[in-house]
Structure formats: C-alpha cells, structure tokens
Length: 112
Length: 113
Image 1 (cartoon, chains in turn red, green):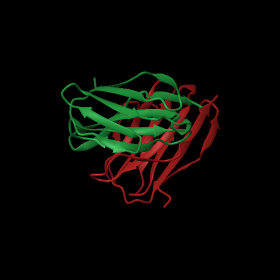
Image 2 (cartoon, rainbow over the protein chains, first blue to last red):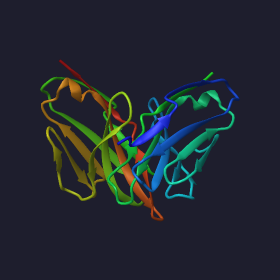
Image 3 (cartoon, one colour):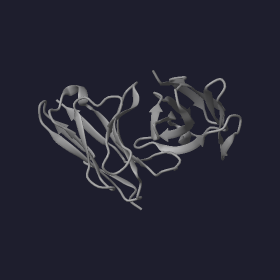
C-alpha cells in the first residue's frame, strides 16, 4: 500500500515564486490535512478538508491556498513564496472514526 | 486558546534506562490524545487514549491518560538506541464534528549505547 504520497520531496524557491505541493492517498480516507513543522514549533495545521468538496483554515493559513481535487487528492499552493514559509510540510489523512493520522513522508521547502 | 505542552523538551539517557515523557493539554472539546514517534521523516502512530486511567501497552512502551488533571505520560522501559526519536503528543478536538489534532512541540529523546 502506498498510503499517503507527497511530491516533491525537496524544493528550493526564490522569494515571490509560486508552487503547488501535491498529496494523494489511496486509503479512501475522508479527511485530509496539511501541516508545517518548524524547529521548536511542533506541527501546525495550515488547512484541512473534512470531506471531499470542503476545506477549512487551520492555525496558520496565511500565504497558502488549498484544493481538494477529489477524495484522493489535496494540494497546497503557495502563491508568492516568502522566506518565512521555509519549513517541512506534511500531508496527512484520516478515516472517519480512525485512530490517528497517516502521514506522508514530507516536503522540505526552502525559500531564498 | 487550545494548547498542548510537552516536557521535557529533550532528554539524553543510556541504554537500559527508563524514561517518562509528559504531555499536558488545555483543549475545549477533548476527544482523544495520541502519541507519535518521529524519526527522520513522517510521524508514526503509537497510541490513542480516550479513557482516563486505562493503560495502553505495546512492548516496552506504555501510556496512560488522566482526563481530570489533563495530562498523559509515555513510558519507555529498557530503552534502546532505536528509541532515539522525537515523541509527539497530539490532542484531538471535536469542533462541530470536524476533528482536528493539536500537536505539542515534542520531546527529543536520545539513547546512548
């Protein structure tokens, strides 16, 4: 089973560039999430999608947009990257009633 | 504001030692508490606790929740170098039926041979 697949694994952007982080899960999970992880800050929720067709802001949504393309895919877009968005990004999914998230392997993003 | 606080921030022990990691929380609509282990990449699930006073065990790891005092502990006995990782505590809140997890900053454990 692939589980949760994130692409790319690494990315370097220049300030002001845009990019989309892709996430797909093959477990038929309803809920999907995007987190960022920074040293000393833990995992912070950016956006989530409780079900296909819905998205909601998390704790740190500014500078990001998301799209729940279908039940499998949940993408995160940076429209104009800033150095403060340098981080490791994790996508996760969860089934209804499930115990905890299944995480993707992460995307390490550096904005210079 | 909902928050999850873990202590200590970091810990260095020798193989064979027993460690206790702490997680306290203030969350409005508590549903469950989870522990994850994070080595180099994605966090992996360890335990989910929903009821007070019931210990969950998996090998040398165990965890218990106290919903009255709003904390949980994760115990690791007879530590091994492979236990070296960041241990994350997350609390699931239920806001209008949409479950979200609030993570603590983690405890970094290093086990020396």
